[in-house]
Amino acid sequence: MDTIGEKDGHQLGTEAWQSVFLSSFSQCGNITQSSGDAGVTRQAVFYAYKRHPDFRALYEEAKEQSVERLEQVARKRATESSDNLLIFLLKAMRPDVYREVVRNENINVNMNAGLDRLDRELSDDQISDLIAVMEARRAELEIGVERPALSDGVPAEEEILEMPVEIQGFLVEDGQ
Image (cartoon, rainbow, N blue to C red; front, side, top):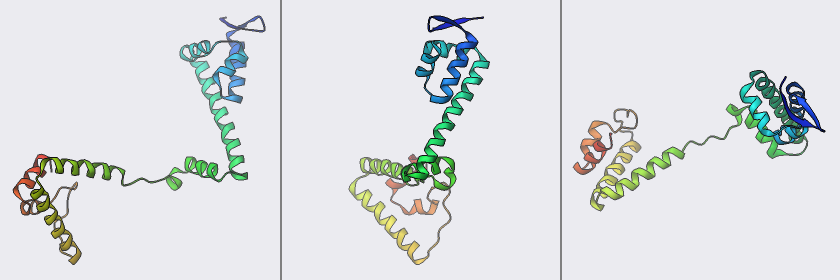
């Protein structure tokens, strides 16, 4: 039997320290405190975790028990006194219902990058022409003029052909 660690001046066999460690860890969820309770170093715990599959399985079970204990305390506090904690728990337990949905973040980043590129690569006159094309398209949409559906956000060929030549080149270079 391996002897790792010392508790109250006595050598602990592997099974003895592991039992003490796992019992403490399932209660507090803190490796430093639990390894101290077991009289071993944190490194001994990590070594056993890495080298002994049986210990690793018991460690994971003790960790799960510790997390469930925290959830139990959090649930009690949430229902008794904390709206923020209640919201947090609902989001964690039912993310499909209570998660926060962020939809515009990527669109804004992509649009800003595109606008920066337009500003760098097109003249003021070219940008004015592009704005005129976009405003004309918006007016068409407002009166119900339909164009072929866009696939992957790529303008239909006839829309590109209506744009000034420099802007057509910009769209083609961009892979659109």
